[in-house]
Length: 311
Image (cartoon, rainbow, N blue to C red; front, side, top):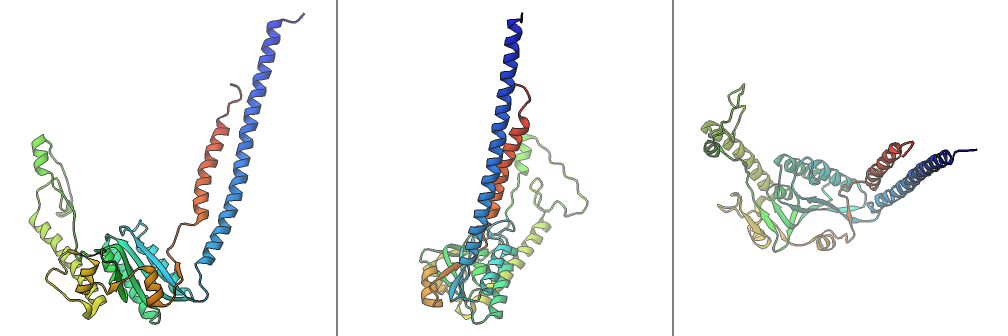
């Protein structure tokens, strides 16, 4: 005669094992479904990417658009590497009749601005039959205007902000604040200027003078680039290179810009190629899908591996 308690324990254990197996099978099923869906999405992304690449080629004639948007930095969407890649692709395209550099930038790194400026000038010299025009929408200030000055012509809106031809160094000093709270800064250096413009120490007049010299040098480079790009169109005033900004209408009067215009209008009426094709480098769809898919797969694998033998 069997023990009812033992029978119940065996049945409970069997039921638990069956439940665990079902859970494990369900998780593996989800895992393989995710893989299948991921492969399908990647295939679709590849097709879309190929289609998008074809859309960026105009076999007849078009106006090539390259965008400079945001603060200019080596890691930003307005980096010289990204913008230059777009410009080079635009000039390589056999159907390009003109290039528009659409600018919405408050400036940023003078190095990034200088590299784009030099490349625009190089491409203009290499392809004299393909004009390069800058179209300022909201703002082309500081480094943004530095780049615009490399174009054949600059088009603006009446309310665009243009100019800020200057150089700035941002810093702060907290010496007095530290004294009030009884905090002592302890900085040890090897090299008299290693702690250059240390915010925890009083300003060293020699370091301030050296910094001013550097800023003045960069400012002169900026002014030279603007004069080179704009030529006799500039109507220089005492304030022109002081760091002030002007609206689009006033910028035209000063020779900082040439005329009112937007992307579609300049493409149609100036370049004579109404079709606008964007050559600004974009993150590939396949890269975005792969990144998202990787996160999902990692979560599913972790869930499967966490499933215990018994619960």
